[in-house]
Amino acid sequence: MSVIFIIFQISVVSLSCSFGEEINLYGDAGEAYAIEVNIGHPHQKFKLLVDTGSTTLALAAYAREDSSVYFHADNSSSLYNSGTTIEAAYTQGTWTGLLASDFIQFPSLSIPEVRSDFALITKSHEFFTKASVWQGLLGLAYNPVGAWGKSGAVESWLDALDRNLNKPMSFQLKLCGPISTSNTTHYGYFKVIDNQTPQSNYNKTFRTPVLRKRWYEVGVIGVRVLSSLTSEAKNKTADEIREPDKDMCTQLNTVKSIVDSGTTQIKLPDKLFREVVDELKNEFRKSQVLILDEFWNRREAACWLEPQVWTLPWLAIDLLSADADNQYFTLEIPPQNYMLVVGVHNSSDTSGTVSTYCYKLGLETGYTETVLGYTAMEGLQVTFNRSAGWIGFQTSDCGANARITGPYNTSTSLKTTCELIKPVAEVATSIQAAQWALCAISIIAASVLLYLLAPCIKNLFLKKMPRSQQISLSQAALVEEDSP
Ligand SMILES: *[C@@H]1O[C@H](CO)[C@@H](O)[C@H](O)[C@H]1NC(C)=O
Ligand SMILES: *[C@@H]1O[C@H](CO)[C@@H](O)[C@H](O)[C@H]1NC(C)=O
Ligand SMILES: *[C@@H]1O[C@H](CO)[C@@H](O)[C@H](O)[C@H]1NC(C)=O
Ligand SMILES: *[C@@H]1O[C@H](CO)[C@@H](O)[C@H](O)[C@H]1NC(C)=O
Ligand SMILES: *[C@@H]1O[C@H](CO)[C@@H](O)[C@H](O)[C@H]1NC(C)=O
Ligand SMILES: *[C@@H]1O[C@H](CO)[C@@H](O)[C@H](O)[C@H]1NC(C)=O
Ligand SMILES: *[C@@H]1O[C@H](CO)[C@@H](O)[C@H](O)[C@H]1NC(C)=O
Image (cartoon, rainbow, N blue to C red; front, side):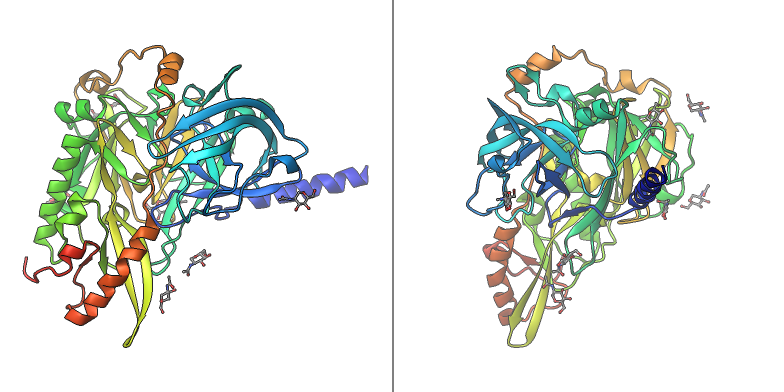
């Protein structure tokens, strides 16, 4: 009796300890956030990208050119390998694998180990990045966009967890961005939460509905550059009537708008992307900072000799509110978020060690789609209530000082005005037909970047460039005129 009591005590203590916050997500510059996982019996340890843009857990099961870390299927006594082939194509990269199931356990999460389906990746193309520290993906989206085997949908890890606990669980992402100006590793927190557990962050939650439970599809009402740093941000009152730009919001949601932690950038439909970038470019011209066109147009990194403090406009993203059909709220994204730090590089010179700080634009064309990548989530605490179908945003205690304002009322239904409810063709079949055109990872090739940087640094010293001047990675544009 007493023994049982002691064990009970210990488990309660360890449970409450692990509910305290512990950093459990890390990512390299430009790459998404990854979590440590134990798979199989005995445990084999891996890192998986936390990806709300796909559903199926997929893991490398073969040695790649650049990495010898992979799942040794023969070594797990609990593995069940169905032998069924499955494949997937993401925004970047493809893989082919075998449908399997085994025990999945996250050392940083206080939830039970569960048996879940997953894919053993046996072949891939441009899926793993050269120096990537991760070996697979942890898909967190809904079943309709998961991989399919012969016997139907492949169960996601979250569904396996819900089934095991016999209740729906939600999860939370608190992404914080780079550790410091000299360390570009970014960090954050991933938490699975019981729907009955009281919230620990009492900041107001702004909820947006998941319009369709496939990806996390939401209603984006507008994306704007906040023209002045103070006037709009500090001088608005909630509950005021503000009409949406019908043209913009229908454009944003023509195909779909998703919240995707596996994507780096904020992606906008092409026309809007160009409008927003033009506006930012104009604002930049007014400031002292010089930025070459390649940065905006050719997605190149721009580097400086010291970390940049951006006094640039904020970006506003309006999202449909879950409380009323005629209401929206605004995520206000600071420049620290969309000026992504993609590398800090030290190099030695006769004059000593020099550091260069490189940045890339956190905005990209999504062609016809809208993707809110992790650039839109850093500095916020984001709760994904899968079963109830909403995503909640709160300001957080780490990362950039992103803000949330609103709610704002409109005079008409936003779902109607912005054409947010469209009949969707037979979900399962249309997705199967689309050959797993899942949205997932978009990765910046940091290794290429550092390689290209070396000649720039050399030139920099030969030409005695003034401090704070930008170095471009493009060989042709190494020197920029001083005056705007
Ligand atoms: C396979 O499992 C054994 C223990 O059963 C362990 O000693 C060995 O290191 C494992 N090999 C790999 C590659 O994980
Ligand atoms: C950056 O921080 C991480 C996590 O604390 C650490 O593992 C890594 O070594 C650091 N990198 C550098 C270059 O200091
Ligand atoms: C998810 O939504 C349900 C229904 O609205 C609610 O009861 C539950 O508390 C929510 N979970 C979280 C973590 O907010
Ligand atoms: C709004 O800002 C203007 C200056 O931009 C100021 O004069 C005015 O008092 C502000 N209004 C409120 C309600 O804060
Ligand atoms: C805004 O809309 C909500 C929900 O429809 C309503 O409760 C609130 O009174 C409205 N506020 C204003 C200022 O119209
Ligand atoms: C670069 O040098 C600075 C200062 O000497 C140091 O703090 C930093 O950790 C170095 N970064 C890397 C990536 O080596
Ligand atoms: C609530 O938000 C504020 C910023 O608005 C932040 O400073 C604070 O740390 C947040 N609280 C928690 C518990 O995240």
